[in-house]
Image: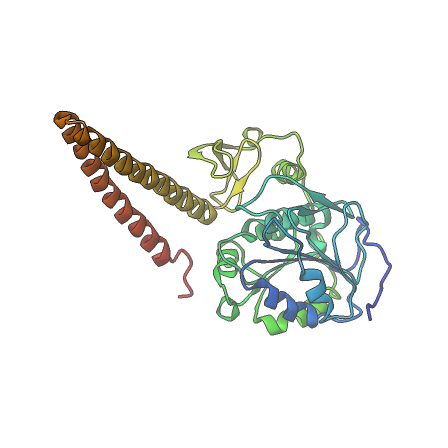
Length: 351
């Protein structure tokens, strides 16, 4: 049975940390099950979860998590007030944001190729609640969550990272630890109980939250605000956005480097490299397809001209077919080499 708590999370000063934001990706379903199962039934905080999921089809995560806890677990609803003792899950194809003490669901630009993405939730929570936020990064590939966790730390929040050695996919925890001196690095089995303890401790005092125009702008971008990346502090990066083809800007501010295109698609270095590799492979497959079609057409034309006794045209088309076959072999080798390089990459190390 769900344990309902009805006290609304206010935006004023409170004595404890009462907003917990959690991000997970590959290996995240099991990680979230373990974490949520170990949260206390009387948790005096709201929990918001982003798991990277495909943009098509419904998410079963709320149902999965509701089976392991007495806390109410629900898909987040746009405009609803944040309440203690509840677990809110980002729905498919929407960023989950906090604007003041209310939930906002947005079709804003994808970040690191994801919507929902972890960084938009973490940034918006840091902006709205500062020292009252606890940010948690769990198992996942690539490095979504690192920039958002840095924003939480900069605003006086508490940072918790799953021990990379304990994660099924350690890339996200390792990336977070590269950019943030986490307050706690714990095995998964200890995180839920630790969160219950942390949210009962006094929130850090004396933290003066200065205006941060870049943070404000990035949250607004995630909410489809009329802001473009060339209005942010930074400079043209010289790369194209894998999502829309627009020019990327390298942003100033932690962590560095970070990139956004004019309309707001955001990329970390690792995500950008992987998307560029995917775009390169796609281009190579298109080139291979065009070459194979040229081989077939050239051979048909060669045979047609042979039947009509056009020797010179026959030889010309045969030569074109042989050149295309040779080029096809080169492209096949390139595809194999690109795939081998991607398989062997180790951007983050446990050493």
